[in-house]
Length: 97
Image (cartoon, rainbow, N blue to C red; front, side, top):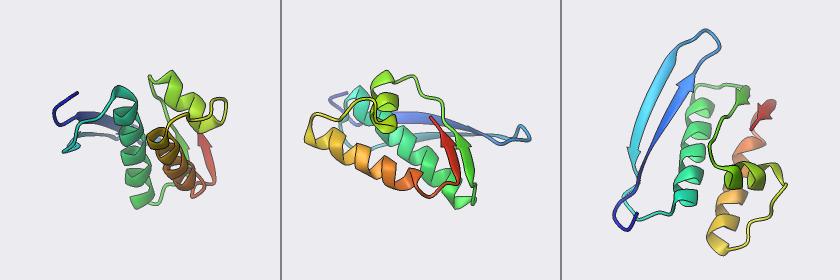
């Protein structure tokens, strides 16, 4: 989006509690950047509630494969997002993307 981008995330606890967030990024973002921002928002949210295990669902094949190491990020922005997500992922005992 050439204007401010936004995203929505849904968190579901093991006991079925559902929390929905909508976030305005405040800057233009590509679809892939918005997907990374959504993933980072989810990771930060669950870290705040001290979750130790996480299962992440995403519709972005690119982001999922970059995070899992199947694809390498090719441009500087995606490389930075990939590094940020990988840093956050190391804080969980178990995570599946």
